[in-house]
Image (cartoon, rainbow, N blue to C red; front, side):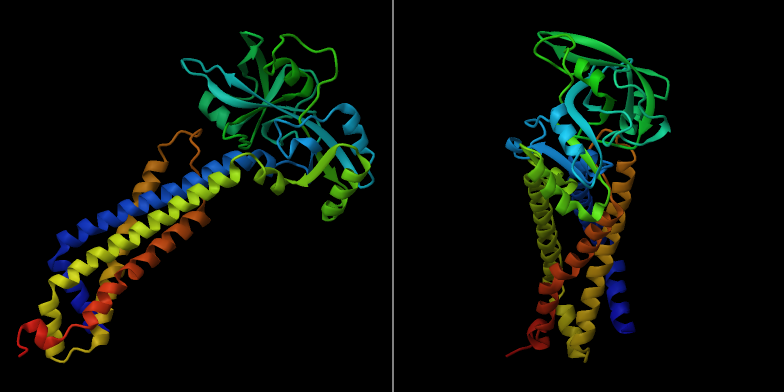
Length: 386
């Protein structure tokens, strides 16, 4: 083993410029793979975060909506009927719309998801600063920490929302009473307002506040016994006409484009890994071809194939490891400079899996060159064959 290590490190040192250059190529591949993984995680999180973090076990849709929040409508009578189902502890209406937050000193507003919730009921997010909503028609809001970071907001500040009312833009001022953890919906940060306030502020074809009770898109349902989730979902669908009840995971996986988006990013990551294997394999194959006479000399003086193979593998692992370390450091440095509203999330588990895969693909890509070095015949390599 010591001979193999000496041979491997000696060659790397003599040709350090070449090996460092190739390590930089591996570093670029590492940056690409880590960013694709982080983009996939960020886009996935941005589409599912709000639903995944709901303080409810079930989400109730209108049955004809096919689990599309935008197409679903749950009125007050339906909410009341769901509340009366045995095993249901609490129900809250959720309304979804879009708005723009006007930022001081910025020409472009920040697009946000405007969520209507019932104060104190399922659907209202917990706050990390400030307090929850107090009145069902108060001019107050909870903003998630992404908006607070981008706009520099604190509890007690006011935000201006812009929505389209008929053919004109209208502006509404709400007081920030609480700041929640990140609660993205549709890859946009969220502003939570009381349901009646949401109904007034949300974009409408006809301006003005409706005299009827606001109608949300879905209902968030808390259960007395979360373990009975599947049974209760069937009971709700049986006892309440025109609804479909599903768990949170089913809800966010049914978001339009979510599954397709994740499949596309997974395919991109797979192709990036394949490119990495081919590039690393090609480099070491050329490297092996250039040193056939040296390999022949080693074998001619009695060096076993095992030492030749281990020396080659050590070179591959060393170069790949250096490239991965450089690429990981560059990725970390770049990630620190991204604004909080960019949908890129570096999860430790996903990053570790990506780095482990890159470290595996190095030796995998170099197996062809190792196999070729084992087949080198000393006499032929030295030009002494008859």
